[in-house]
Amino acid sequence: MKVDRKETLRYLGYGRQEADGQTLQLLEEVAAELEADSMPKSIYREYGCEVEGDKVLFGGLAVTSASLARNLKGCRRVALLAATIGRTADLMIKKYSVLNLAKAAIVQAAGAAYIESYLDEISAEIKKDAQGRGLYLRPRFSPGYGDFSLEYQKDIFAMLECSKRIGVTLTAGNLMMPSKSVTALIGLTPARGQSCQMPSCSQCGKTDCEFRQEE
Image (tube, rainbow, N blue to C red; front, side, top):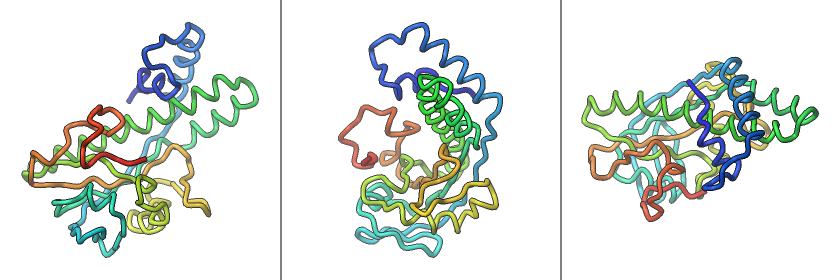
């Protein structure tokens, strides 16, 4: 798995503007270090799903979130997942915050792009299995989007046994450590026309999509 250079530059604020040679060189150095030393791990489980108003029920958990309910409308199953690229990015950020602030900023962006690429791989695996059953995927939706509270991280961690299975823990404020870690839900719908063909909302320009993440 490779660090997505283009996505990293986007996170750094380079849109149509070309990055300078020094930035590109630092990016290559950061990407090589991340790719060599990171240890991606993931787990996902599938549950039956019911949507009732602004409540979503799956795996014995009841989530109150109008945003999540809208995203999962019409879904009867949901994949719950957690993924991390490990501690390497955090250690690099700590190191380069002392040695090279510009490089530390690039690690932040590259780490974010790296975990997104890893999530895309997991989503592709889920998609392949789902399509064999005539099901299609909705966009990933994570705690912290819209009114889907971070408080539900505790329940998700318990359901997936994140600490035991992939070595990710929660802080008192429900943030994940290592920091380049993600939990998400992916709705599975039998209606192809109500599915999403993009790996994530950040890569899609359709801003009026009813399933779009609200950050």
